[in-house]
Every structure is written in C-alpha cells, then in structure tokens.
Length: 388
Image 1 (tube, rainbow, N blue to C red):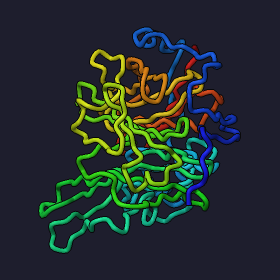
Image 2 (cartoon, helix red, strand yellow; image 1 turned 60 degrees about the vertical axis):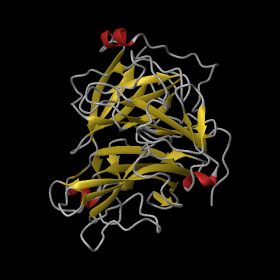
Image 3 (cartoon, rainbow, N blue to C red; image 1 turned 30 degrees about the vertical axis):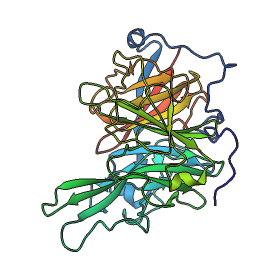
Image 4 (cartoon, rainbow, N blue to C red; image 1 turned 90 degrees about the horizontal axis):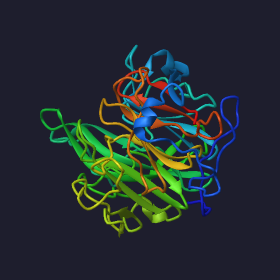
C-alpha cells in the first residue's frame, strides 16, 4: 500500500505561468548562501523597503459552489503526487444553503487564486477525512450524543513521491441534551493519495490519542530527512505565547497511521520521548524553544511550517487569535529558533490561522510567499515579499 520513500522527500512544485520550477530540498544546505534577516525590531523598521505584504486577491472557486458564494474558516494547500490540493475548514455558502463541511477537500489549479470544485452541486460528499469503521458512533439515538462530526486537518505532508499523510483532530459538535457542547475525541492520521480527480485521505486505524492528547499538525506538518515533523502550540492565551510541541516519525513507517510506537516528541531538555504522544497539559516537559523572552511561541493552534529556500531556514508562520501574523525561523525542524518576526501591515486584518502556501512559488526561491488568513468568510490571498 505504501510507496517506497527516498531518504529525503522534498517540497514539490510545477512549472506554469504562475509557478516557478520546484525546489526539492527540505533541509538546511550549508552550501547555500542564506539571506540573513536582521533582528525582529530592525525587520519591523524595514517594512516597505526590504519586505512588504500585498493583497494578491480573493480565493475564488469554480462551478456551482463558486456561484453560490462558498467560503470557509481556513484554507490549506499541499502538493501530492505532482498535483496541488486544498483542504478547508468549516465551509458553507453565503448566497444559499449548500450544506456544511468541517473539512472538505478540492483539487488546486496552477493559479493560487483558484480552487477547482469539480462542479460539485453542494458540500455533500467532499469531506477530506471520513470516520474509521471502528470509531464510536457520535449521533447516539438516546439524545446523549452529538449532531455533527468533523476533523480539523493539518496540511498533507509528503511521505513518498506519490503519497502523503494528514493529521486530524476529531471533534464532535453540538453535543448533549442542550445541543451546545463540543467533545474533543483525539488525533488521527490518514494516508493521502491523489490518483484521481479528487484528493483522498483514508484512516488506517483507531485514533492515536484520546481527547487529552496534543492536536499534532495543526501548526503544520513537513517532511525533512525522511522524517515527518508535526507542530502544534498548546497553552497560549490572548496575551502570551504557548508551548510548541514537536513530534516526528519516520515517513516510511507504515505503523504511524495506527500506532504511537513510531513517534518521538521533543522534550525541553533536548531529548526525544519514544512511543507516546504527549498530553496537551504536559507543557512543562515537552516543546522546543524560541528566542522570545520566555522561550515560548506567540502562536495559537493554527499555523504553517515549511522550509524556506530563500532564507535557508525552516519557517513557522502563525499568530495569536486576532493578533498580528508572525513567523519564526529555525536552523533545523526542532531547534535554533529565532525570536518572533511580526508582519505588521495595514493590508492584514485581525485574524487567526496563518496558512502558508509554499508550493505556489512565484520566484522559485521563496523570496515571495503566499498565505491566507481566517476566520469565517471569503479567504484573501496575501503575498509576503523579501528583498534582502
């Protein structure tokens, strides 16, 4: 079922009128002359001369759903089996009722601004990840269950030239007799294929954690040196950062879809735990550190992680809920991380969920990066340009 994996699986891209040639590395290259950014304070002063953010345009949709004003809470893109794909969050239509999907998926196009809906008439049957056959039933007949099931999904990280992995946080919504509560169910991992017109994610087994585990991957997932790395921040508030949990597993290990045995998580002392996925409350044991004063990451639960070939660094993009979009630069997928760089710009709204789209790579070197911001409504595409 699982394709063989090269030692290093890279970020992929396709050549088109919009996209430059792909870059195949996802690790720091000592032979590359990196572009060094100044301190975060100087970076702020350099806005408009050495860097800037511009509005590229709204994310648009083809077909019937586009005409019905479909919109979403967040929008991630990935590149699997030589094709662009999107997976969204909390999608519905503004012009008419077209259904609701917590995590739909669609093919991408060569244009960053256009999603191909395959002319679906509504949002039925477009979920990226479906329940596993062994999952507990959410809509119990006695009224004690929940009325909606869904997944909060990461981007899809490649595990081979043709397949990927997506991490999902399973949630039951509109629960109980009052139809108000939410139940966190746990972390799932699914095999991603894109052999037909539509991306497909298949659960291979039970949830990896219960609802107390960390929701790995919601701050991004990437492949470097044959490992899949996952990121999520826990413990952040509206005014302070949280702990960045970093997990990893060998990408060619087929057990990572149904067992925790192949997973490692970075501890604060620099060692790695093995065979267990932490609880979200274990912020004093696990996590990598930044150069911010308290070593935390000024991020909420959603974000993106990728290797930036222009800066020759790993780049984590995120923000606190309705705070400024920001990023951190790291020497490796798990250490050597900078202090926070804020993207203070008049064109950026108060928002959450910075979703970077590095496989749409206009200059071929990540000196320009497209990203989207939530929450609900028409997703706007922004372009960050470095000129150092």
